[in-house]
Length: 367
Image (cartoon, rainbow, N blue to C red; front, side):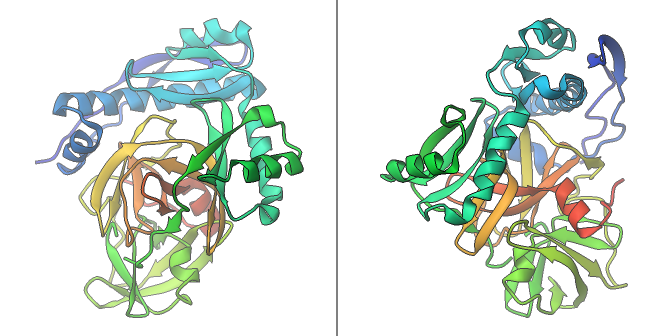
């Protein structure tokens, strides 16, 4: 059974330069979600079947509203999250005079101290000092829920974090220190969406099909010497294209003529395009070890310090994953979000799909 016409047409108001204009959010058409996806959301997010479908629909609208309003706010944009309780986008601004206009767009509004650009600038400053950061510091990034940059440090090492912040010269009031029990690790066995093999012994996951093959995690190539590629059936798969790890975590594989890239996840969910879903939005991933699991989008612009190297600009989630899921695709509704990189027992990180496609020069296969 396929679930068709999940998203209907919705009229929402969005902000344009200097005024509000009502625009129609286009219907997504015959958006196909494999039967595995909604049950996974029910299981992992504690939803009923009807609640899962309603949430997907409201999230689709919230993403469109957020994209339009954030562009109009410019420097006054403070960040955005998805409020699961109300089904609305929750948009932050540093300008109290714009609260009314944000609410007219159909979103919730909140006045905050820091703009998104200020928080991203703090992350940039910490990234510049990354090589001097003590090993006890496991990463940092923007948390739109708290309107702060969060810096993670191993338990009992808070003083180390304070010293690093003081040396970095950032505004300490914009940073929250969190203690964590474990350092993140790369989820490479290496094996995922669809499994593929490197050099006959390592396994990784297909992220998303492209017009010439697929994109996956860069460490799957970099840490295996970019060895010979074979599919799950043992047949020759193709060749490595451009890849990057550390700093980034993306890779391109150009498949041979015997393989046909399909615009869908390995459970049949159609890939219609890509988006940047807000914090709090439900998201699912396909991986060869843990299969199809779901959760929510967390903090963004995360700097993650693996023992093998640091990766910048990632997104945190609470989606369950394990060793062998590396490279698998994260998807919200029918929109690609990113490529699974790694994590720890509580957090899984993905590298954003837009940056992966830009870095590899690949084009997402869509239907």
